Image (cartoon, rainbow, N blue to C red):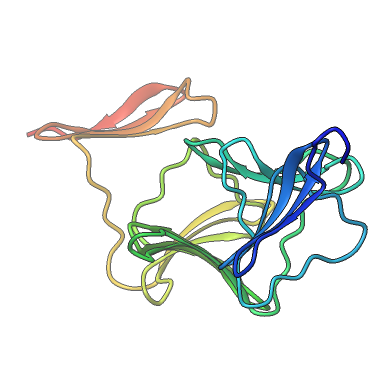
Length: 219
């Protein structure tokens, strides 16, 4: 230009550069192109056999008329942010798998038409199945609520079950003996205010009527 500002610069056997207000915005390189600033595209950006890279910790991949979807790294952490209306969908024709980058250990798997699996140190601990869920290891919870006519089952063959059938509560042991162990064993009313039976280790067994002991074993 008459003012000495660059519009375009081409170097033999080297780069081509494009400028805006004398500031370089586009440059070809041996590996592809370098763009300084933001790419505003109303169409598709295609990289054939290469990468699309944001070379700073302040740059972002943004999509949507209001930049609703943003993918970026801030020098400490990486983010995928959906700041607009609606949901963030991750679609796959097979499975979605979350893995550790260094070891490729699996953390979570979402299998198409199948299970959801959660892992601890590459060992599966939780899995959804057609009839419910499978937990490998211990389960710690603040509470457990099971509906009427729904069972808590223990044993490889469900030999021990607990159930409330809308009328009565049942404990069923279909194999062997039902053994309860305690230094002191007590049976109380539902309110917990009256004893009906009490058995003490190395001592007596007592039967109650209206919270009064009526029968007691002795030595």
